Length: 456
Image (cartoon, rainbow, N blue to C red; front, side):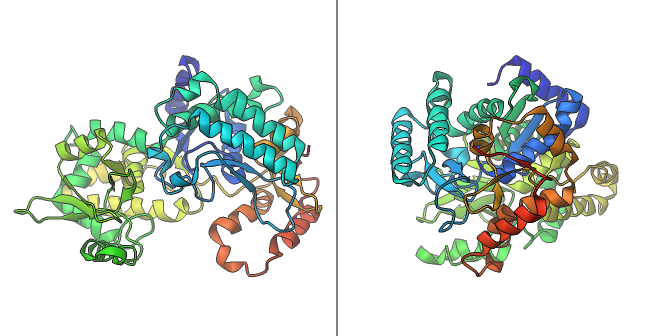
């Protein structure tokens, strides 16, 4: 999709560093925290003439906090009344619950409506002239190009658009290491269909060896980003609104996709004559059932009736192949738990102890998220995150600014990102409507002269 040169660079990066960034959500990335995590990895790639490879989670709704549904502007005109960036939707409301990985490609009428919204926001004073001009230019030059509009899906469009916007972030685009921003579930499915054709692969063993599977199911029951078998059972027995009241269910190994391409939690059952199946019930009552064997799972993955869960993705990419997945603050909690469960299960079987030693040596506690090195000053004199629009409006990143970013302490980078972190992970701790105004000013006093400041 990005040309042979970028593909070769990305492949070389994987073979030399065995490292990818997995902290991000898929979609066109305007969220400052995830964008700047990608920039952090780029600082190292620049030193080695390497590439930046991102495997981003696509099984998330396009209307979530990172807002893959449209464009975010942090430097807007009503910071006193609004915490966080202004949202400009590209996809209409009917797609709010769609997942990035199943959302159809955006089309020209959507882009025309988005450009009209930009004019409305500029005329109302909610959006600065500079931000409006940059948004309009991106929609015209990048989103509307033939290559993007001919993509089969939003997931493919996001890969192309992130690559194009990446060049705009650097004052000298030749200083930008190549960026390959890919959907993790698609990569996992491709790898997994090959693994499931081999009985000795790690995925085949964990998923289809009854003893191993039961140990993993038991150890990870109720853990974050895994599954809750009691809640899944309640959901599958419930009717109507009772399904949504079943609590946090997670899913066993895979998500199902219903007729509307929305994800459905699945439980592993051994009914129907003792033959295992993955089954679940969609919110509207649609019943899903997939035979749980290598052929049945592979076919469902090929037909996009199943999506790999986070557990299966990390089993396939990190534990089976030794790729270090640089994650976010949530992954730093749950991936080591998943890793330990798989190693413990393998060690419990004498014939799997060599595999246990191999898997135990893989790196599953790497972290790269919740840090920012580039900020902007809002109209109240506070320090706020800088997304791509703010960086572009400030002329792109100069070589001297890239050097400043490299020297920033990890502690200060976490402070610079605290507003985004609170909105994501600590919203329940914030009970003062003006908390962000106070925090922005404190950050300006604390970090002035340390971080890179980009203003129009």
